Image (cartoon, rainbow, N blue to C red):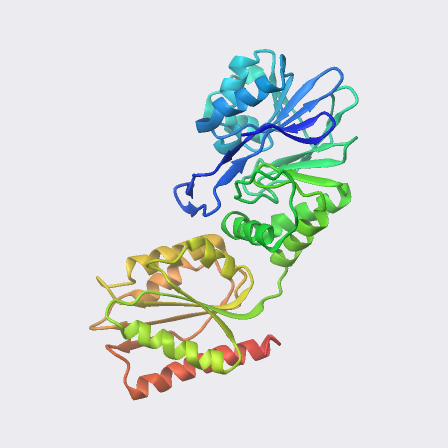
Length: 394
Ligand code: FEO
C-alpha cells in the first residue's frame, strides 16, 4: 500500500493484495499478489502505467494523493485484463484530462470490458514515442503474454521496461526490488507455469525483442522489480527451451486403494531406476505445484479409478487443465483400475489431443492389482525408463 520509489521521477503506486488466495477463480495464491502501477513524472506531462484490480482502486487513488498528483495526462494500458485495467474508469473520473494510451486490440477489449468511451483513447503502435519532458516512453508489442493485445512500455532515459504480466510473479511483498533469491525464482516459475506456459512460441519471440531493447530494469505489474534483468530473462529462456529433465510427474486419485497400489509400484520401480518422481494426489494437491512440476518434466502419468463410467472428476479436471497448459512433456502414460469397464482412456486422449507428446500404451487393471498385474506395471515403468534413456536423461 506504500508508495515505493523506483528511481528519480518514477514511483510504484499500486497495491499488495496480501490476503487474496485465488486468481481467476482457478489459480491458488499462497503468497498473495500485487498489482503494480507506475507513476512517471516528466517535466511537462505525467503518465500512469497500468492500474490495479477494481477492488483496490481506493488504495491507488490514495497513493496518487500522497504524491500530490494534480493531473495525469496519460494512462498507459499494457494489458486489458481487469487486474490491471479495472481502475481506469475511476482514474478517468478523478483525472478527467487523462487519455488512455494503448494499442488498437487493447482499445477494443477495454471498450468491451470496461465500457470506456472511444474518444478517451490515444492509439499507439510498435516503436511510437511519447515525450513527457525528459522522460520518453516507447511502445513495444509483446503479444500473447498472455492475451493477444499485451504490450510493453520502455522508459528510454532510465532504461526501464514495464512488461505488465510478462515476467510477473504473484507475490505480495513490502520489498520493491527482487533479491534474485530461490523464493523469487520459484514464485516467478509458478506464475510462468500457470499463466505463460501455453504460449512458449510467442514468448520466444518476445524474449528476443526484450534482449534487443536490453533494459537495465524490468518492472512487471505483479511482484518485484528486477534490477538484474538477466536473472528473469535467462530463467524464461530455460523454461521455454525444448530441454526436459529426468522427471516423471504422476497425478492420481484413488478411491479404495487399487490405483494407489499401482502408482506406488510405478514410483518404486522408477525411483530405483534412477528417475525422479513427483507425486500429486489431486484431491488435495495445489494445482500451482503441479503446474510448476510440468514446466520441465519429461513424462506425465495420469492415473484414475474408473468412476461413473469414466475418469474420477478430479483427474478429469487435472487432465483438462494439463491440455490447456500445454507442457513440453515428451511422454504421457494413462493408468488406472476398473470394476466393469468405462471410457477413461478415450476421455484422456480427447482432453490432451493438443499435446505433441508420445502416448504410452494405457494400462488398466481390474480391481486390486495381482502379482501378474504388478509385472505389467513394471513393464509400463520400463518403457518410461527406456524413453528417458533415448532422451539422454539417464
Ligand atoms: Fe495480471 Fe493477465 O493479468
